[in-house]
Length: 141
Picture 1 (spheres, rainbow, N blue to C red):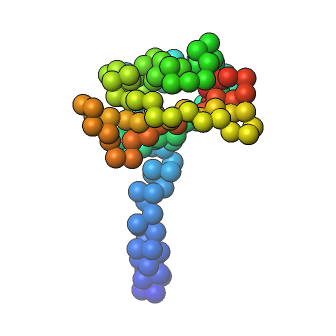
Picture 2: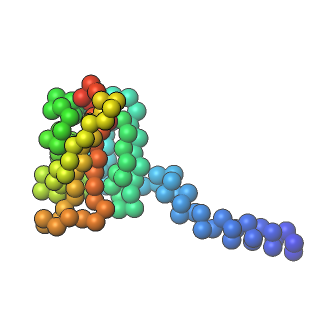
Picture 3: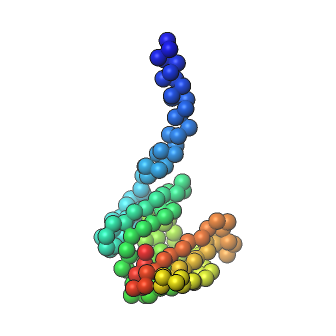
């Protein structure tokens, strides 16, 4: 009896953590279009690409080296072009219609940070900001 109560207490204690564990473990089912876009991204990136997924099923945070952004250099044009190239992964129709450039900053290490503001039918989306980082060699990160 004591053992069963002990196990029940452990279960009750850890039950609230199950959604966090599954979210942190990146258990996310990709659509066919997202899977194709993800394969293309991994094939075109150099090194390891890591993605953390949002609850909406789109990338919330990505790390990697994305040379496809390089020819366009650091800027809003390169960031929007990247989003359009992989729009299925992000569930976008047209990045230029869904994001507007808000500002570009350069830090003391030579990194350029491009901020894009998400909008829906011209109305800004609360919390909808995308930041792209370019290293000093002008490669998207």
